[in-house]
Image (cartoon, rainbow, N blue to C red; front, side, top):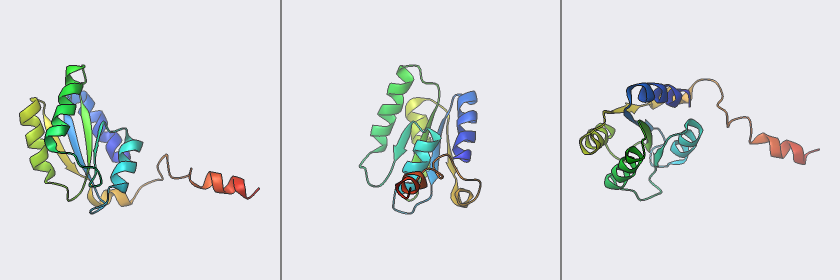
Length: 126
């Protein structure tokens, strides 16, 4: 989440689109959780059929409404993120960068969602 927050800062200040590859092999669970916690505008996971043209159409719709930047979270192995970023840039005219988070996701402090799952179970034990 911290990495996505930092990408949001730079994407916002430079009015660019960031494509962030999240680990998870062929499962989108980590991507979905990271994207929700990080406030990503777009999420691409293997479990949901979505083409790059669908994505570009959504990004263009956001731009038409005045959106200046966006973050796209995508599960690894779905496509080449550098090629996707180039395609988005070509189609939207907005500078677009790809970032592969890799193993940096495995370390760090607990995120905002981590402590919460135990609360309901602890309450049931009272």
